[in-house]
View 1 (cartoon, helix red, strand yellow):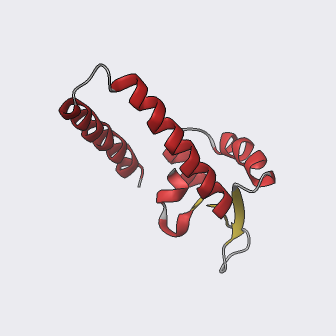
View 2: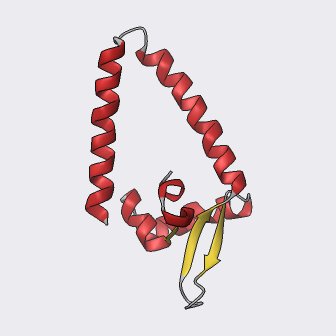
Length: 107
C-alpha cells in the first residue's frame, strides 16, 4: 500500500523500510519473492544507476485490489453486527488520521 500511495508508485528501499518500521534488510527479504512473482519490480534511477526503487507493478496493483476487497469484506463481517454506521465512520476517520500521522512523521 505504501508503494501504491507513493509518487510514481515507487520508493527507495530505505524509504519503504522507514514507512514500514522495519530494517532495510527486512524489506530486501520481503521484496525478493514479490519480484519473482511479478508483484513489484526493481527500477534503477535514471541519474544514478547505483540507486534503485521498489515499484508496484500492474499485477501487484491487481493483487492489492483483490486483497483490499477481501479485507473489507472480512472487516464488514467483524464490525457490522456490533457497531453502528456512525461508529464505523468515526473509527475509520481515526484510523486514517493515525496512519496519515505516522506516514507524515517519516517524510
